[in-house]
Length: 428
Image (cartoon, rainbow, N blue to C red; front, side, top):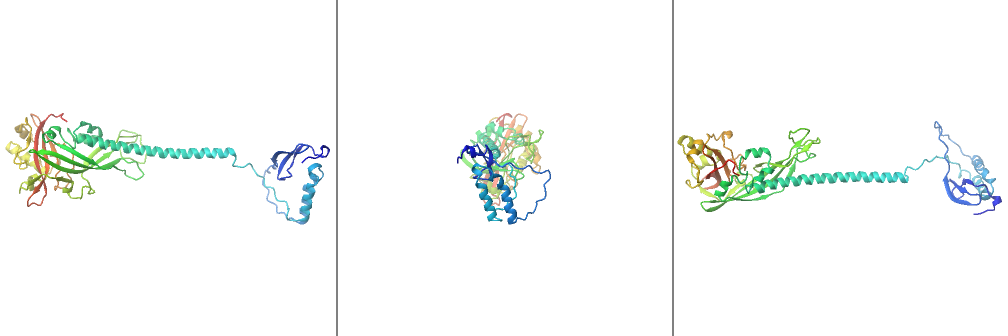
């Protein structure tokens, strides 16, 4: 819209004829595209109580005239428009009643605040994702370490490789003075042509409370022993549970269970023990189900049910004969004394050195090399048990195997001595 120069108002900001709620710049000859909000009145020092105004037709008309009068005197684009508005106010009282002006502050959702919000959300979700990724990585790492410890312990122990010691805790290391906790001592293993196969179940992790990190784990283990007795191959099976743990440290060098506190350090996973299963994974809760064998011997009354049914009673029998008769003798020798006897075994020295044993006193039992747990029930016989007897001339390993008894007997398993070997103390 253009008008003659002599009829135009001076260049300035005026109410926008297209939108009177804002200002628009008049350059002296025409409207520009520059627009601006109406300046806000400064807030009073103390907020006044709102006034209740009664609008009448007369008051509305007067208000319209007051608002439009300045523009009616203006030449140019305001010559007719304000009068038109005034007529409308006068003709329709109430419809155009003036409304209180509510100052509008700057919008909170500026481009800057939106960008800031987006950045914050990205950081928050990134941190959450990072925490989840760290937790998953940490969880995956500790599970991997536990599985490596389990596999390293079992795979080396069944072969008699001393590397099993790298995956066992100190308590287990102290118990096994030589050999390995599954195969036993290597000289005996060679004499019996002993071989072991194994099957491992998945690791199950646990802690004292659900929200604490796992510090214990266990897995099922099936062991199949194959050895030669008098040139005949025999097979026995044992079911065990392998337990592992990892120590948590809280500002000192004292290992502890996991707590809700942040640990100063966490130790590696290590195997702590082999124990008898408690959930019947071998087929049942009876002791005979944990140890199975195809080695059968006839039941000998007053022998199997008195001396041979459990290792402590068998060793007490050998100890008594050694001290009273000065010879290594037992009712529980395999096949009337046909055992694997090492070439340099000095039975006289062994008899003289055999310790006194009371079957009821566990502290009197000689060191045991194979660490299969026989359980509390006497109605079970592990495939292999080895005991260390230290003599004046050497160190001896006395080996028992579990057997299945046949005949009219209440018990189904018993034990037999199958090997005595002399070894070096540092033998693996």
